[in-house]
Image (cartoon, rainbow, N blue to C red):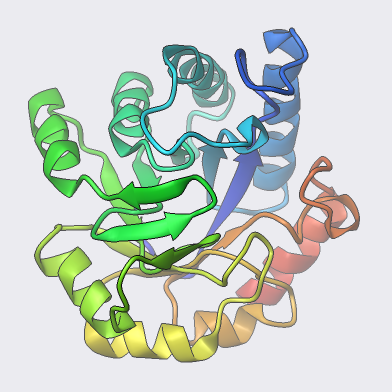
Length: 260
């Protein structure tokens, strides 16, 4: 998927089987995901990113097999309903290898990886990246799946201080990420322009995405630096990430992002 003023809409999954708030119906989970996905695509977004957002609290290690199976089941429905829309997968907190497996099985275009290099301290504990295992899985699977790696990350801080320029350089040149994502400190929090500028200077030829806090007001300035925006919180009803996608908010954000 070529990144150029690309808008990626978040499809936040309701709690999946085995998670604390699971409500017992995969039909309802899939229907809600499909409704959000259609609203995003109809409103003008270019791609979708499927995420097990409802499964909090998240594991610090590999996600359970039930999570992988349920995510794959919904991903198949999205691919069938919207075959022309690129799809990405993110399995929280940081199971890149499971996300890659789902992506390879359903024909998704990319995965997002929250911690691809180094280690962070998050609410789950200490989380380490596994670029080594993920890239070897990609080779073994023969999967043409791009890796969008967070440069810094939401709800986490580095275990040891690392300048964002060094992290960006390592992610690209040592961990071989295909694109970088720069976010604010938490879901829905604004992404600092200074961080975007520093990453852009460090790896000028690498695709760069904004990962949080996008609004119609901020979109033009962000796109002056970034190649694309991942949109989630703002496009929900009343800007509440727990609610369904609001088509009017999608259209407003898309119009602002497309404004030259």
